[in-house]
Image (cartoon, rainbow, N blue to C red; front, side, top):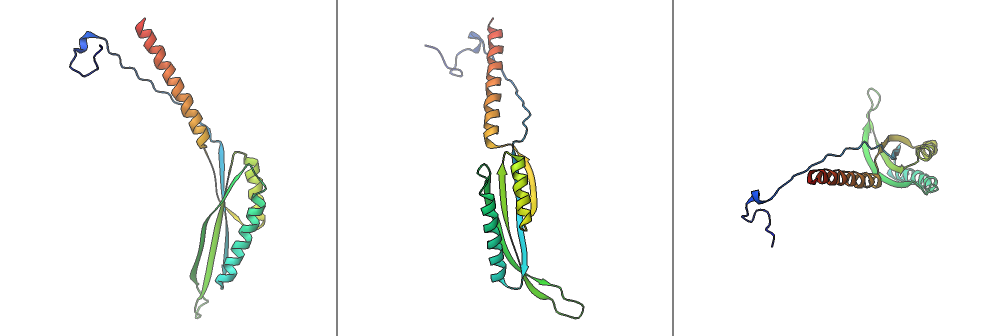
Length: 161
């Protein structure tokens, strides 16, 4: 019967070997994310909200033609603010509204073309950035772990020889 480490057995009865390895890999982003928004001002909330809804409906109809891209709407906002009047006049209350659409995909060309089409109907680019997709992160993590384990096994075999 073998004894477990820490059960009171004498450590000097056997050989203990601790091995460690560090594996590092540079990963290039493979996912492009574009965020565009539609903004409008109006004296009427009804007019403002209808215009936002119509524009976003049109934007989604254009965007949905690109099956390889992921499209989502975000950040719907409507609020009132006071627009300063001319000197000696009172300001007037105006409603402002906006909504964003986010496009994600691996084809920069498709995203840039679609972004241009959406800008033609009145949306403006808020953000454009790239990042590493979850799929690629998992692929790299698995590869790094396999490499690290192989290095450890190789070192352990060298120590046993």
